[in-house]
Image 1 (cartoon, helix red, strand yellow):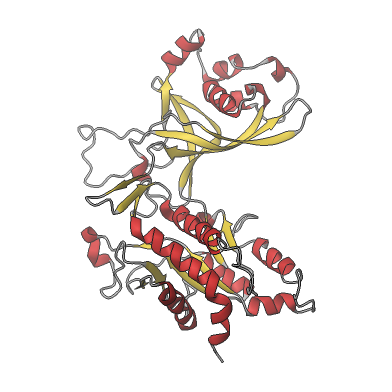
Image 2 (tube, helix red, strand yellow):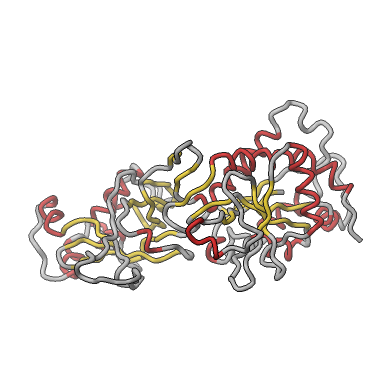
Length: 405
């Protein structure tokens, strides 16, 4: 099995996002995860996510939307007005994006200025608002033009939008960079990078028509949400999602052990690779890294180790993954944090604890983790795909060759 997460730190529109100040239209946002929020200032931002829509049959269905053009920006304060040694700000009062000018919106709609925000809300009501609504309709809680943009993107009437979960994103696309095209400059490498490598390797491992002829194992990739906020949700790694799937898989199929302990036996013979991006050494902050454990970009996937079990790696797991890497000739690196530094964690330890399955933590090295714009290595993507593909192809054979009392 390979487990990874798909979420990244971001800003999410508040349930009531309609704000304005000093003639600007603003949008209320909430922080998700532990982002480097200063990197979100002065970026060309837009919104994307899930919208719940009421159909003509009065069913409620979801629509996925992405507004491709930049509509939001979080402006910094000019240095002439506040000469800070370090950039500090209040996340509740100084992280609200601007979306436009009140005067421009009034000109667009042909409305006269309103005396208060309440007056503006009253003016935006539609005929459907005449019926009882337990909470205010979206056009009252959010700027009407934003609702219109969402409705256009979802190809539905704006009055049919019931609610949504929309996050902000940087509209600048990912690109290849560096003097020799050796870098990937992109948002959300943590952890879409390892999610991509996991799924691609699973597909590649099945490219041959005879790939599963002698296979006695199930090849599985599990991508979770909400890792950045603790994983304790129905979609998170701390849920019963993966245990439930494994329990069902353990008692189906030809040759499966249909005993009362089939699930437990499956867990005992399984292996989980927890794939989450790792830290590359940063040349400007080299002293922050342990001297003998400084992962380098484009030098291979990084095995993460921590004596306090912040990572689930142990020596038996290293023996397995090292043999997997040897068979496909890809390099590996080792990483531990300094004793005087805090250590992050992954879904690895919590899944190892809940399943009792052998687990190893690894990931490709990157810079600027949790920034709005991160940096990874081009060649490390290929290394990880080949490593995972070899893992899927050879685990069934290698599993019986590693003995631990």
